[in-house]
Image (cartoon, rainbow, N blue to C red; front, side):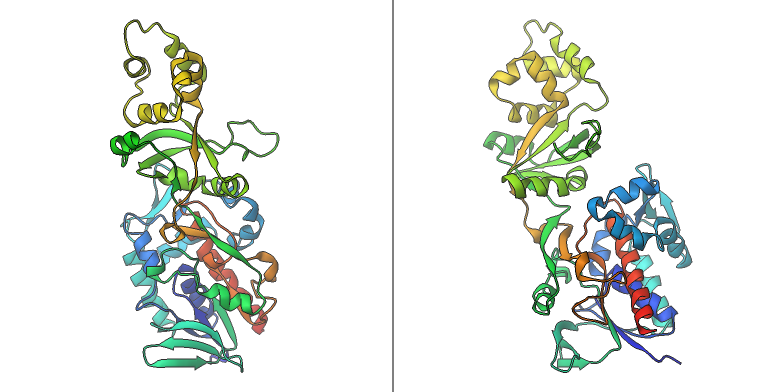
Length: 412
């Protein structure tokens, strides 16, 4: 017999995992979502290949959450990357580790996993209520929802909020919950773009010639973000960058977005340092640049000696002044450490995810709001962020499970 009733609000990975954990504990679960169907952002994220988690060692995995690593680690201790893969296997979805260490379903798609998951949830008795937008509480403490049939009011023994951040509002992640919780005295950090593109003041010639071109096989870092006492090369990561008409996009930029965002907050601009030839050391590059070029132009010389051409050569020319470009020593140094000045971020609604949200100090160790006992929070609406690569999804799954276990402990 199911004695307790818990409302889960939000049908993304965190909310669905919370619902599954609760149902498995014989709790009556009603899940509410504002959209016509659940998991919409999850499905879109997996359209080009669902990056479920990452296979790297635990210390490196946890480091991706930066200053929030100790908080997130408490969730991952119970449901980490391998547990997530085992869970997917239990749904009949095999996974594999790609060459980059990223973990994908064998089908590469999110839809088969979500279908199997929803089938399991319904079999567990989870009741899903679509088109129910949460609008807060009434004077008696009941949950209020805006529905096609008008306002609905619902009572519950406990509530889990898994409402997402503030990006991709067309899929339901619009941050509308922020003023509702702030009004109740919950400490919420402002939502900011994360895993997003950044703006640069390109020349008209560079825009016309290179917008849409990729920078392949590069490395990059943000000055000043290396841990104290470590080598200055420590923060450099390898990947690809996409040049756009107004700046930079791509996985490598997303991985460094936290440091770039902080630099913009502090100084109004940020510098992304790019190594255009990460497979070559600085001494070799300098030797090739200094090799006599005869009557060749610098562009021809760089192409023939370093195979540096196309978008990489264009970015080098764009970011260096005339005098620096003509000086072999400074040109060689820039090939290995090219400073690209960024002036801003793309709008939050274009970001893959957001930073900010309910701060850790607003909650207890069970993820329950101190200002609202019996209300728990999970997923991207909490104040943590991580790069793409499976880190976001893993923590959302684990956080949903942690919030559900917190609610069960509180009820008991």
